[in-house]
Length: 512
Image (tube, rainbow, N blue to C red; front, side, top):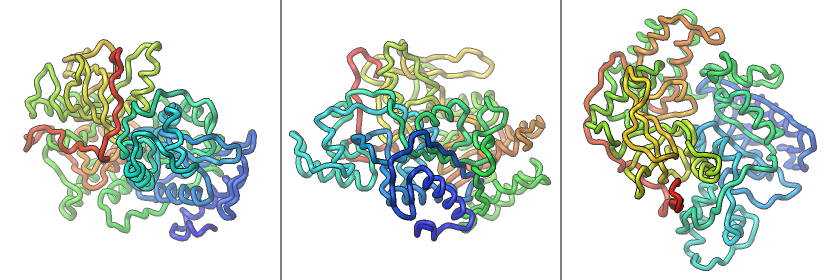
């Protein structure tokens, strides 16, 4: 067993060894540090599943480190070096920007599934710079870049492993070095997929076309994709290919939120008993709040989690009313959810530009103000590596009881958005926020409906997913009331994390 595994528990070590054995079968020997070229026709799939706190992310990180130490090249969506016949590659993927950012914050270089499907086309002038940063070439000399700028780029890359981020640290913009995007033509090698409970069959088949070797990490207690009748991708795998983690590692931190999540597995716990448990936990620990009303201030960055769509719309309207938002415009700081990109096929390149920057369906975005052209918006994509962009926008404001949303302003075509002050629990999967507000009246409505999903009451699955979105604090909201905000909406918290933010400039025909 590799020394990497010594810090793991028994169940994690067993899963580590099982994945190592699978990798050995496809030519990657972690113990001996031996890498063979990928075998033609060889493929393998394994799943590592466990509830919140069972150590899936720790195991994923340890496997990633072991692969990197063995010489496997980690591939991200922002740069892929020159192909070598003998190289072995690893990509670490998540279904959403937010889920990928959770891994990145823990030191794991993750990107989205969509981002890996498309690769950037770099200006040849800067390819040598990217190769040097990745450790595959000599330090280049590039006109316009000083030695100090190269040093900044190198220092950034050593910490963040992001080529565009390193370029930005050197003072370059995306339009300086990225000339476009192309659909991936060649397959990759090994893929780690986090939050795999969110995968549907079509996504899984797409991944199998790209990665002959896949390891799925998922939580069996979450909600399955809506089109799969309560089943998750790893449910269909043979039992020998699925490894379960049972020990709750984060319990060492005495986490009351995880205590509540795992209490839902008790068949004797009904909704009323669970709510009493939440109230008792709130009396003991400030990380749980038994809240009589929704906090409007928190909704600006952490949406209220609800079950019913009608509840979502009513809470959004209450939020906008609390901040005196006009009916015909957005205020800077209002949260949005990307609902897709409406561009014809002839503008495929522009669609790829937006999607590669993180503006995919379901992305959480903050409106920063109008762009320089009519219908354009300055946006901040939450969880994206390079979050600031400007895009043609179609914003839809929904009202209770009305089928068609009101569109206060819009470009002829571009990215479409719904308001993001409240979202359904299904849409929240894969995301985490420091503070999470769960709208308990909706959970109670699900309990009264008596629906069951894959043998578990739906209200319990909804509750489990909702409360485990909280990183630090859970607010269990008991009434349909909204507290007044304590300050106006702002974008001051959305400061770039690098000295010079990476931006893509608007093109002449006006779609990006």
